[in-house]
Image (cartoon, rainbow, N blue to C red; front, side, top):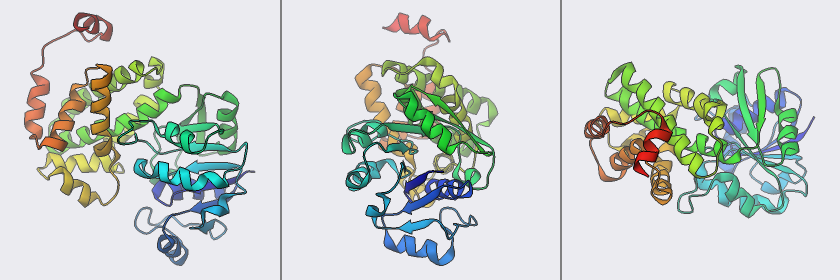
Length: 338
């Protein structure tokens, strides 16, 4: 069994800690805020983010990041905006040869870098593994069967993570397409906000199915332009995670979208969710990447306009439906416009 450090006391950090401890690993769970750690100790759970999920007393809770120094595997479970700061703080305490994993799904605002790239800059010399796939924290913590992907350029490191985390309720596949796996995880949150908007406007099943399908095409289009493999988007990190995030009320991206579709302003919608809504953060970055790579992403563009310029979602839908007709085969119409 491994000595595992988990950075982040949000829903997914807690769920990973509970699962890893259940299957025999020694677990240290670090959180930035001492008061949050004290509250978890007091109540034996994170009442706000994962109520009803007991945090075993044998899990080592701490706000002192030096206590991760003996870890053999370090898992990052913090929001995208906190990844760089957390990695920089943790770097002095990550021993040589330790594998670092990231379970966050987003892009760094400003630099437009994938989160494994951010961690690699702050903790150089370590293999960084991206963990992604359809995996709501609420279900992982309850032991619901879940399947994810561990992606790393070093296959041995991906397989080491696979061996460490696979258990009767979590099945882990490996991949060498880090770019595709991470972009899938970041961009599906954008489409999930749009799916929520569809639901908030009561547009029905046809529209939502079309949105998810064409949204996946946009994700793949940008991913391939950035060096990802096409097949990744048809896998767990791609269509698998897209389905679960666009259809579940566990998804804060979906819930925020519902509010926006009902007429709530984007800022107010995020405030009502009360937690990070990665899709609203990533939309700006994805739109910027699309411009840089000259990749058409009309759904992402329309959400960007809704979020940043106050465009009415119904006008956004009308503009999407009124776009020029084209062949569904990407190669056919891309050759026509490029």
